[in-house]
Image 1 (tube, one colour):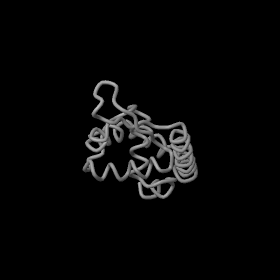
Image 2: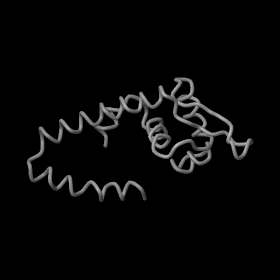
Image 3: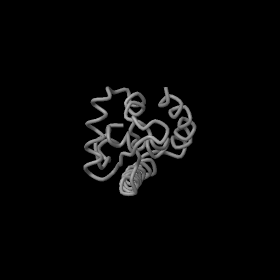
Length: 120
């Protein structure tokens, strides 16, 4: 995990928000804060930074005009894809260069378990 964090093109908190918006679509600030287990004030700061870079946009909630929805921009999606490709490329290279065939099979079997744990 430490090495993958180094490969990120932006801070991990920002990458987590961009990834969540990509996977789950537009969300409110409070929904994002709850999902990332941070205070809404902290999430507002992260969102302000992402917005200043043009990676996210705000729009009124169509069902409740008092709420603001956060969505990924095209620029944000492109940055996220580039970041993922860089990390995936590093990880694939490290696996190919460092692990035996047997170790790669074990790793492949562990992926679904790790995915389940990450969702807790």
